[in-house]
Image 1 (cartoon, rainbow, N blue to C red):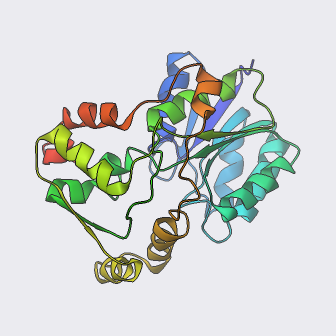
Image 2 (image 1 turned 120 degrees about the horizontal axis):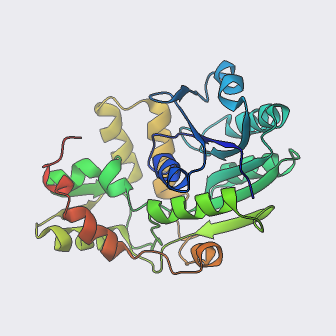
Length: 278
């Protein structure tokens, strides 16, 4: 079992901070690597990597902004090289399902010589409460290009539990786990579940990907982010991932969390009513 210091890149993000919480609860030494907290770590600045990796035996690798972004495979390969040089052999990469660019980064990691594991995840539940889909919930209406394609939304807490397990337990090296929730929901169905949990009316209007991109551009969203979101809502959400997988069950020996349970618990926090400072 790994007893060395673990670097959690993106350690203040949706999955990273949860991984930090779980490792800390196990009394395992953790180093938070982030642009906004802990030890400075920036994927765009390789000069920050070596100091963050000093004394590290394992790392949770969460690439920003997304493994589908240009240059991600090369960056992951360079990071793996730096990690091995620093003595960090166990690398756990959080990846995306159905993304060819993400799989290119996975292949680079597998060829690096590291003791690697890949957690290939579906869309996060928490995108509706901690990310770009929160504002439409609060506003009471969604305008998205997603239609009737089902997606097995996965909970960030399940991802963190799985990551903590593969970082600290034997038997997971060289494995690719696909992490999903227990059932498929379309985006309109997910929004309806949130509306039911909050007791509010939340509308959903399907628009074209071009309309979404135009709207985001008008709001001042950077062009590369607009392009990435368009890719995720069209190419990745074309039905290729419309099936559930058993990655959570295989790692943790229990079923994944259902979206309805996530919606109920999140509604209770008040964040979807605008009651929580964001």
